[in-house]
Length: 216
Image (cartoon, rainbow, N blue to C red; front, side, top):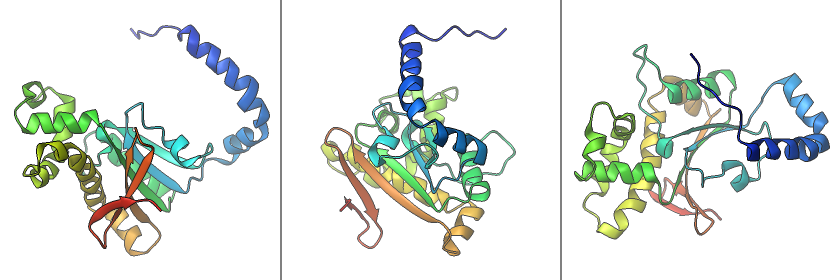
């Protein structure tokens, strides 16, 4: 039996408001998108965190970004084992079917998933060590990143680990053969970003400096 209830009243009200304003004002555009299919320039991989509003940050319109969200915005390494891989499937579809020109990995400040990884790796979250913890097993992807920042002062570890999450994802993306081939052919570029949600700041990873620097 499927358990599902009607939408909460506030969401219904917001839908009617959107349909009467934004949709009506741009109805031709929505119908064109529906008829012609999606042709996004970029894929954005970001955290599920409700404070990270990808389309608002970049002022994106409908049809512009192919967006995939998961805990901490992580990309696992290429693992063609015949099992279920939602993030890997999204990357494959974006690159091989949609032909996106860019993949943007967007990390952010005060990330709960990254903090969970830190707590797990320091022995303060035994529940995440359980084999039955989906979050814990997902955050295992970031364990190598934690080892790189574990020596740092306590007040700097979390921001550093948030940026390591971005770098880990960028490294793992290159283990996908179709991503590596597209990068080599210069039909795809990879980008790493970190968003300070409280200050409205954005940093990008500069490989020449091996550092995150403000977007200028």
